Amino acid sequence: MKLFFRLLRTILGPVMLLKERLTRPQGVQRAQAEQARVDAACQKLALYQFNTCPFCIKVRQEMRRLSLTIALRDTQSSAEHRQALLAQGGSPKVPCLQISNADGSVKWLYESNDIIAYLRTQFAAA
Image (tube, rainbow, N blue to C red):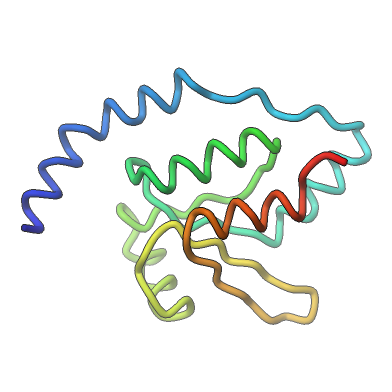
C-alpha cells in the first residue's frame, strides 16, 4: 500500500507542481512598513511540508495570496526536519505550522484548514 501511494505521488507530483505554478495567486500589496512588520512576524513561523502534498500546496497558495515569507521545511527530503517534527510536534503529519511565541513557547498547528485560518487571522489585509 505504501509503495502504491509512493508510485502515485511520483506520477502525479510533477502535474500537481505544474498546476501550483500555473495558478499562483496574486499576493496582497501592503505599504512598505506594514510588509516589514508582516515579514518580521513571519520569522517566528516555519511550515513543515513536502512539495507534492496537496494540502501543503493549498497552504503555500494561501501564503502567496497573503504575501507571506514563511520558512519551508521539507520533511520528505530532510531526515532532520522530519525528526524535529516528530520529536517536537508529536506527529510526522504535514502540513504543520510551527509557531514560536515571544515567551519562548512553541505551538504546532496541524491541518491545512486550521493553518490557513490562523494565517488569515494574523495577516489578512484590513
